[in-house]
Image (cartoon, each protein chain N blue to C red):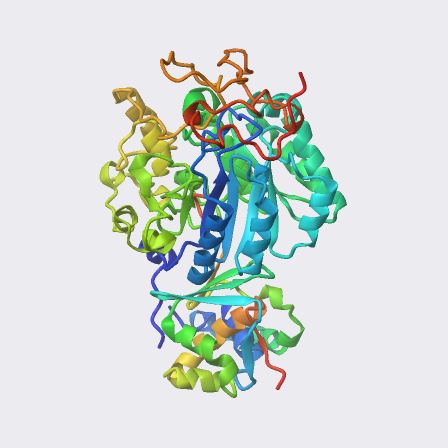
Length: 101
Length: 55
Length: 428
């Protein structure tokens, strides 16, 4: 699959309008340039490379949707594709999971 | 960097590629999550083993 | 449009809020005397952190959100409070992987470990055959290790680690190591020998030859997908593609060492005053040392390539391993002794040949020349210092040569001298 199609898949696959939350076994540690996420179950370690992404991820469970979390973090519409991809990556690694509201 | 590979190709090949990409996008639901690229502009996964200074 | 974030490695070089991987040597006591021991272990140090002090360290690690520690030593399981500390760590959100020679991994212990969610085990093995292994780790150590692996496998502990230090004598056994790992459902991990601790004494004979380094690199590239390396071969990046990992020295930046007496060093391969950042018993504890010690601050400052800066491989290899350079007497701003371009060999040939000695030596007596001493007589009943101890290794727990009840030379005055809580008495 070409890279742009892979990206398109990630964007469609991640539901920005659903409610999300951090996986309960994930620990978040802010860093100067972003944050470190460690999943105690899978032992995966992920780096969030911006503070904005940290804000989004930390606020997921208190926002009605991922899109709302992005907007509350001050992101522009044009930022959403990149952030959606990032959230999809985290979801695939089970760092974040859908909220069963 | 071109937005997509189709910008580089002449029309018939570009059409074919676009069609293939559409098809690939339409098949998204069946792909297992593990195929998602773990590397990203904003997220990077690293191995807890991949740090020198540990025996 | 989102700007591209700076490379992760760039950010890591400047240090992190807390270590990602922290090595914690729990004790200098060990039932073995491996010839290349990086911590020169063997005898317990009388100043080792108490159970309470260890728990306070764990509390700090929890507060700092250190997710994961590598516990080693010496042989960490010889501490009577080992199980208690393991439980305390995992109850306080600190995951543990501990390194062991397997001496205490009974079926019961293996079952308990298999049932524990946040504990990983790493068995040390330096030969795929007893002949190769025991030459480095001592008679019986191969059997001990494999027995421990069997117990872990039987207990259903999938994916424990087998850790191998690569030497001149085991490079040809890479496939055989993998076969052992497969046999027990374990994962193979190989790491680099450094001239640290007792390693300095055997470095010349044991470190892989230049040709073997190439052989190792090629094997990792071709067959090493599921093999862990702890990023310890980043100096081989000069051959071509870097291997998986951060490909950088993590000392004082993403890793460090806490030693049995609470000293904090930049890295477990650099146990020397030159790399001592502080002590956890000082005010501010570990957190203050990590965040603001002079040593770590200087390590986190951008360093120029020095003599290596003009080499085309420098971007990949970053000048190699600080500890390897230090303990072979090479300058830190020059090539690694095992530089793949041969610049390290050249530098060694040109150097004066003086090398720093490790700051401490907890080796079992008899491994080092015994100096003549004029001083207090040893306690009544103690055996006189003898040259009759085995020079290499020691049998496993069942027959550790005569240390129980014999006062440590270094601590004749201490009431705990020679205290070995768990070792059985020596059969005569």
